Length: 318
Image 1 (spheres, helix red, strand yellow):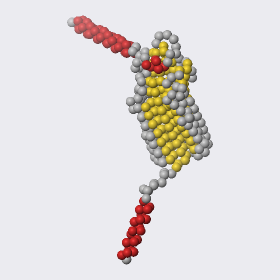
Image 2 (cartoon, helix red, strand yellow):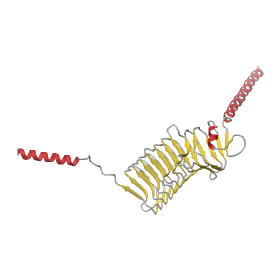
Image 3 (spheres, one colour):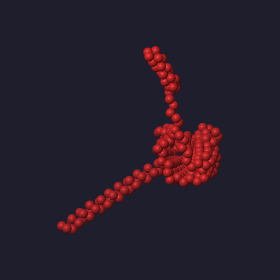
């Protein structure tokens, strides 16, 4: 009787093991099948799935595909309207030149990854506009000689990481009504305004960037609750410029050799400015007084007129 029980018990265990193996194999087969749905497309190479232009590869791609671009000069203005990866194989030798078009890359999707390119010759290097286009990543690029390097308008949760952004007459990186973005470990050299946050660009992180030889290093205007920390800001005209911007956190930055001032603050109370390292700026921190309150036009004339009427009435009845 005991033998039969043991055999029955062993049979149940064996059956369970078979079912687990079958279930694991079934799930693994499904995962493998899903992974194979993502394809690689190539630009500038030879062979199957190779295209002469980047836009051609994007147009023929599907969601989650990767477009791999070989070294060369590509004279294009590119629209990305899918969640794909676009990877250049050599940051310095995969060159996209927009020939003075409005943009080099126009991003019309979320979850786009662009890395490994020299991006030049446009009014804007990378342009993202719209709340439906977010969670994009721009990293490992050399963005140079545009009017603006990267412009984000009304978009959030984008990552700008480890790029070289240089020689822009206007702005290196500009955020306009854009929140919760991460700007980290970029080198910004020889730009007009290096990083510029404008009009309620709130809750962004500006971290461990190197900002050298720009007109303005980091400029905030009507922007709140941003974190500016551990950046190197040197040899600019002004290091950090705050105007009408409050409750920002400016800490642990290295600010040196700036020609006018390290930090300039105008009408920007309630910012936390602490633990920064200053060295040989013309002036480390400069606070400008709030603009005087302006009375309504004609207020003084109204007071004067009432006083005259009062005086005439008193004189008549006394």
